[in-house]
Amino acid sequence: MNRTSFVFETGATTHEGKVREVNEDNYLVRSGIGMWAVADGMGGHHAGRLASTAVINTLATVAEYESASGFLTECAHALEAANAHLREAARSMSLDMIGSTVVLLLVRGSSYACVWSGDSRMYRIRDGVIAQLTRDHSEVEDLITQGVLSREEARHWPRRNIITRAIGAGEQVELEIVNGEVEAGDVFLLCSDGLTGHLDDVEIASRMMGDDPQKMADSLVEATLERGASDNVTVVVVRCAPREPTVTDVAGSPNWTAG
Image (tube, rainbow, N blue to C red; front, side):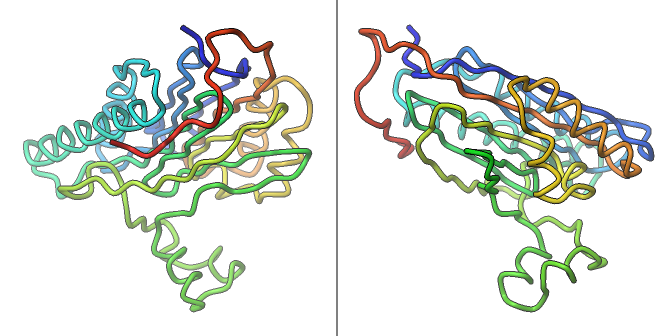
């Protein structure tokens, strides 16, 4: 039973870039249940590919839940299962860590939840204005928050790629969650840091005008490749178009509080 207030038009593209031989990024599109994700693996020796695949495959098994809280809880459980799998895989391969970032968009009715761990990002473009919904879980972002570095200084900081959270990084999964209301015409962008390492917010927004999410996704990746694409790059673009309400629609905003 479809309880969403929107129909979703999605575009998605991933590329290994111009330096890396293996694409350790992965993405998930499940528009029918209101779920989209991007994962960026790490660990070396192809372990990063294993990590991002584990995260995405586990999220792909999550069943549709009528309640927002149940949906969010099951996604959290899936990420906990992926975390345990990656911890065991690292031990069996005698590696210190196999991990993956994740950023996840969930939509129920006219409300969204953004869930993430690491420095893969989510943006929202509304009325032509771009807003970053996530905060990077990274060493450099912590230094910016503490006032030690400026944004400009951070672009050249030698440890700017050190992240502080990831699926597989610790015994317990550390997730951050924000939620809000969806408006007709909203466009969400989920991306790995291969995009944001080359394009700033203004450049990203300029390539997300129009009505075709796939063209937006392709344009963002093309621009990254033109800049040298020093990392894998993955983008998922979700455009929210209104649909006529039905008798199955739920009044009010969903409760995203996980049970």
